[in-house]
Image (cartoon, rainbow, N blue to C red; front, side):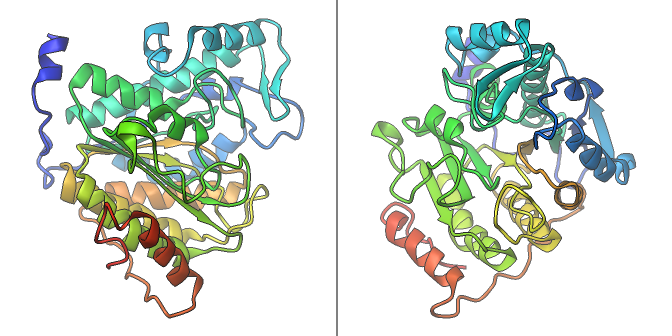
Length: 368
């Protein structure tokens, strides 16, 4: 049956009509707090208190989805077998450091597998039409994890693992991954950079950790053009992000025509975040989330699944998660007005640079 499903075209319209009562699924689990590190580490269990506060205020609109531990065969679609052994060994000998920023405690392997399993099942629910949309509120985050290297607080690449799961099991073809975390998702990009079926789109502070995600990184081989990076200087705020989403992401998404949209939902571009230098407010996250929701409704039957990445200020997590859930739950998306491109502004320069790099493939880049 699995091989038959892969041969059948994946439907662009959702089995759930868009005008049906919205089902927005959320994966939460107190066990995500069992992964712990050195005192004062920014990727700390208490991050989930802020996320939980945003979800609690909207609980009646949400459908709970249980987390479960990912199995080896699911992880091995992205990671090498020695990587799985490394994480297990680090947890067995905890406390351990896997790199200067990345740690393992005794429960870290189990919790990281739980995060990957929760992401898989959330994305499955959305791809299959059991939910319109959703958020996997998991930790540890994942988008820095490479095939054979944990890094940047990340052990397993949750969103990449989930993308491969629904491609392999449900016959999903083209997937758009939107990564608005303030740090470039090197692991996600490298997982798909030679694969034309997954378009990776990232906005991120540059230069900044991990140092990847320059304009010229556009994919390789058959995947050339299916990686779109928008490196942004420190100080960018709502107007710059909303201009890029409306004038770069939207036309590229329409040209790519995904069957499913996934979001690496980090909230560390928030103005209060201690690990970056961006100035995004609740308004910016509202606008970005609404734009992604509108694109999902337009292009792929409303299917959009989000996986928590970074965000190290409680205010940023509360405001960002709240804005995201509001956009997913809304009866209809309400994208923010497209900011004008006044000559010489940073927004205009970013959009012009994106057009210079990508308009050969995506001719509408720069248009509203």
